[in-house]
Length: 312
Image (cartoon, rainbow, N blue to C red; front, side):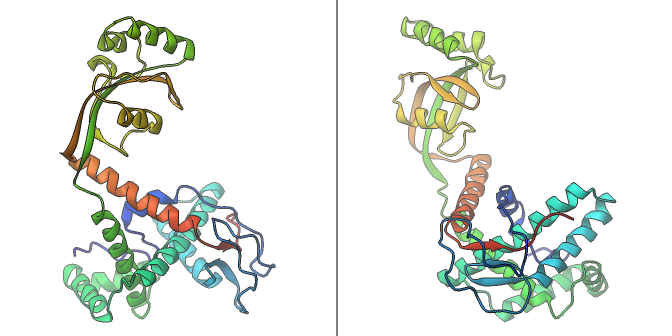
């Protein structure tokens, strides 16, 4: 394992899980107020957890101390200021919201890991710390700790949580098959239903699909090649409606008019391959999607209560 620097205690498997933090939930005003309504799919607990310590959140009944949240916010703001200079009030608020979201997400992951029996031993943690020291040197190691406001005593717990999070993500990634069904399809997308109906009528009268795509499609990436989307597995296209249509058709068949956020589409399937190797780029996208979907599922089924606002 290569270490360039000691990362913050909030890390959620790099960009994979950070990308899943784009939909923050609502907050409630006070950490000492009565328990608010839970977010997600779970029902809020009837009996609040007895504690005198101010809380930033409760995650399935497990407390996020306000002090932990404030420490992570301070680290985040110091790191961002060092790299970008003074932050606006809006940036500070957005950053604080992201910090709490990431703390909650990591707690959800650790809870799921416990249920799944995924663990990391203390010996593995110490080996990782020693590997880091060997990699960057004792002086740089201590400097990184100081810069990020971390202590040697706190590091094993932080690193253990990160390692467990990584193992859970690796488990999800491993479930994504390297070979799966692919469809080769092409499409025409236009802005209005009326224009789409006119093109569909021409196709039904025997017009050439590729020629119509080159003449009318507003998809600049596929228009010049007759609307050809190439071979793709399910879960790749931006438009789920187009993808669903493509996987419902047999070679040679043309869809009815399909509406999506991009416009009105007509889809034709050229070929289907039941067991094709997924390209490296598509496999990475499917793996990221699998992790995002898994994390969103954890959120949806959780009882999450927030007690801090994101305002500066």
